Image (cartoon, rainbow, N blue to C red):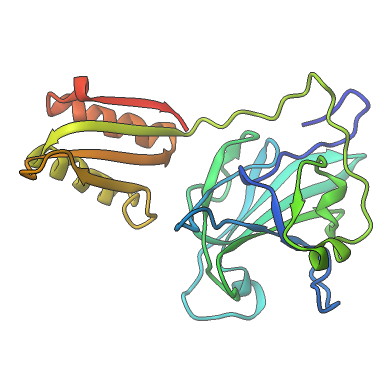
Length: 254
C-alpha cells in the first residue's frame, strides 16, 4: 500500500512472518532476499499472497531438474507494482509448489498468487521473497513492517541494514479472500464426488484436502478443504449443492 507520506508499505506474503534467512546467509554469503518459514504442523504448503497491487510481469514454471540460472527460483512469480519515486518497483516469490496466476494478470494486495513449496535450487520448503527497486534487489525489510521474528540469533545477526516501515494505526493489512470449506456427515459417494473435484482443481496434491470417517461403520465422512481461493470454494460449494448436501457444508474465511 502507499502511505499518505508517499512511502511504500508492502504486505507480508505469508500469514506467519518467521525469517529463516536474512539479507545475508548465516555463513556471510550474499542472499539478497529473505526466506520465510512455511512449516506449520506437518505441512509446508502455505498460501502466498501479493505484497501490493500490481501486475504479473514474470511467471515461471520449473522444469523439474534445472537448479541454475533463473530456473534456480523454481516455480516463481514476479509482480510489477506502481513506480516509487518514478522508479520501477517489483517483488519476487520463489520456490513455489504451484502458482495460480499467469503473465499479465492484475492482482490486488493480499490476493492468492500461489502455494509455497521447495522447487528449484532449494533445500527444504520455504518462501524466497525479493524486492527489486530500479531493477536491483534491495533488502525487503526496508519495505515491510516490524511484525516478524528471526528464526534464531544467528539469523538476526544477518538481517542486514534496514529500517522497518511504521504501519499507521488506521492502515490495516489487506484481508485475503481465502476460504475453507467444511462438510460433515457426507455419504461416501458424496465425499468421492467432492474428492474428484478437489483432485481436478489441484487441491489434493497441495495437501489442502483432508477427510475422516464420521462414524464407526465408515459410512459417513467429514471433509475439510482449504485454505482455497474464493473461486475454488464456490466450485466446491456448487458441487455440494448439486449433490443435495449444501445443508451439510459451509464456506468460511480462512
